[in-house]
Length: 208
Image 1 (spheres, rainbow, N blue to C red):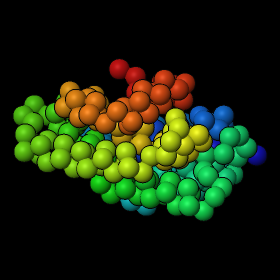
Image 2: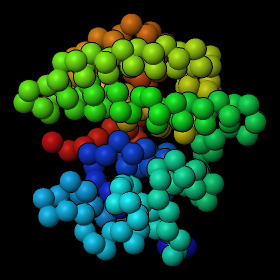
Image 3: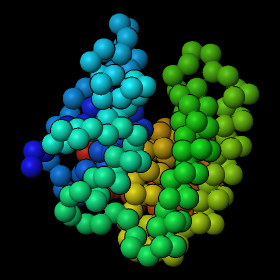
Image 4: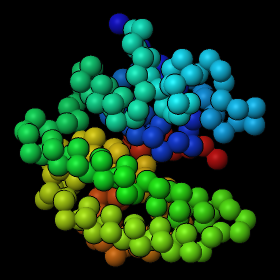
């Protein structure tokens, strides 16, 4: 079996989600850089891997897959190493609920509306940042209510929910407003401090 090939860029939250899954499973993989924001556009050949030109995409033994959640589940189920999904139906459903919530309500607000707007725009849109923080507060409140007792979001087992949340919150806390808001949610702050120290997380940090 050949090692999987992962296409994407290190600035991507969703690329990092997949890399975290690969790292936690102990899988050797090849990275092929694809910059979807390049001045000359998305490379034409890449549309064979992702028809919508987004990142990441995976190729493994001739099997191609796109969408980070699908890739992460494939990585967990196709390879050995520690399981990243609960066996029981209800915890697995909660894991999927958390991932869906993060995609639908957290990613845009926490990453783009707060962190990117504050840190990368010469004239940040303060109204957009304020709206993003309001949404982020709701996300953190709900995440607190869903978190099980134990070190991770589902309790004692590190799961794909943790790996999905970590890059989003990691981007969010690059902004001072993000750090301040997260500090109001002690359970999630403690979880964040814990996962940020894992070798998989520090090893996938964007250089520079």
